[in-house]
Image (tube, rainbow, N blue to C red):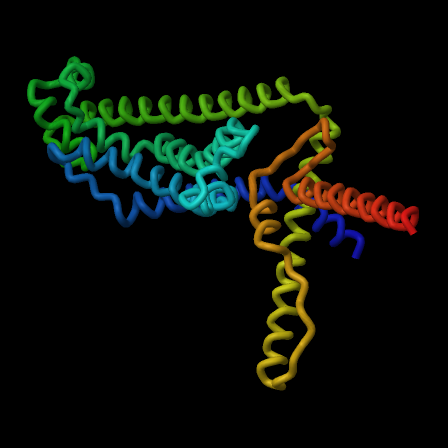
Length: 310
């Protein structure tokens, strides 16, 4: 029992790493499936367009899916056409760019993985560049080759060329090497950019490392509790309504947040170290407590005034 709890706790703490690992495996599997079943290089003057489509269109689809599956996207843009002030609330106009930047970085993970995998494999790049429109690049590929090399280049990726075997192999090895170099450049650039952004965020932070850790843990726990409360309250409300419908009884009112409270709780996160606020919900609760204390103090003053008059 203790071992299973330890394993579960470890897996829970490594959710992000496990998620990225699964994403990487899915990307590799998808690339392999595309290469075996869907990808058929035309071996003509269409090579360049066809190869680039297989390189970049899946990456674009993954980017759009990344935006669509990120809950922060919908938290950011829901209702923005009705009330544009939601995107740029008063006093927090720059927070939109910060939030959208975080969403974009997460959405770019899958496309970068795709480009890295397909470039390291080299199949799509070989097809695309063997039909390149750049004459100087093609001349470099055909350097010290037979005169018909330029004409036969588009057929190299399919193995249907009339070039000698050593010329075909040399061209393919050159294209594969170029593809892998570009792939490693994409990986290194993405890793360096990620590290740079992370370092910049930490260097510009006015909070301590431990406090940032606490904030992240609090945010995760709040989201988990939100889901539990949503499910619990939805269940209770549906049971209440069904009971009223079938038994035809008048039931007591069911407490629910006001429309304004829903709107304020759905706003962008407002972590504020000076006010010790760790989320939008935290801020909403603290403001309501202050308002309650203020109203209670006013009622006390009014009651004292009435007592003195009497």
